[in-house]
Image (cartoon, rainbow, N blue to C red; front, side, top):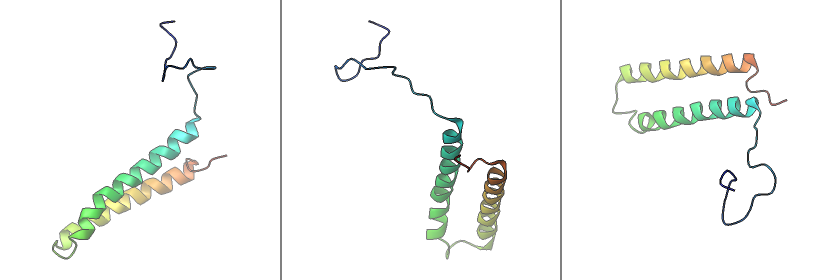
Length: 82
């Protein structure tokens, strides 16, 4: 009884552990990377007129690195679900 999972006072039916396919994790990882990119670029976009050209070049390099990563993941098939 101590090793069984317990939630909400109800005994579980079946196995409590589910196995996900590795494709799901790869897809989720690519999503998280581009979600974090949005978080980083939003403050930059809000203060674009105050910042100089050097910050624009740094942001452009950041986006280019992420695009190269996206192309690599695409060619390796990380975005294919089937």
